[in-house]
Length: 139
Ligand code: ZN
Image 1 (cartoon, rainbow, N blue to C red):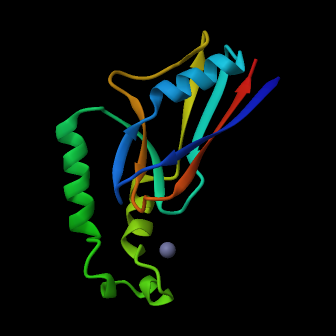
Image 2: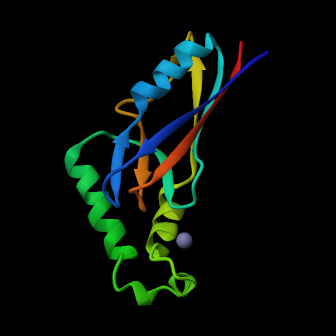
Image 3: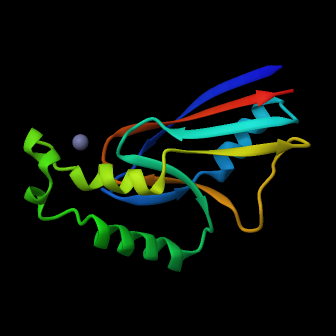
């Protein structure tokens, strides 16, 4: 069995953003040379997510609005976590609901998606360098 590991780095200039990282994952799969197996993609930070859904601008805005309703960034003092001196209490909660990782089947050398599935990086506390891990195993 072969295995492949790669870190993707991001530095999002805004506090929050959704980035379609499917092209980078497709490139990593090609680089791995693996044709049949599994591809894990996970955020390496507790204020960012990796998830799968549609790349549709209305939906991305719906996520932004929904997450801000659930866990608004302000007022900062609303979150006990921010008593540590941080201001990202909301970002930890947003990450939790959007998830840490995805696993995609690899079939005949490609990501075996359902209709419209795309892999996204969800940033909830950006403006600094953060990583996504790609691990592919198979043959
Ligand atoms: Zn924090």
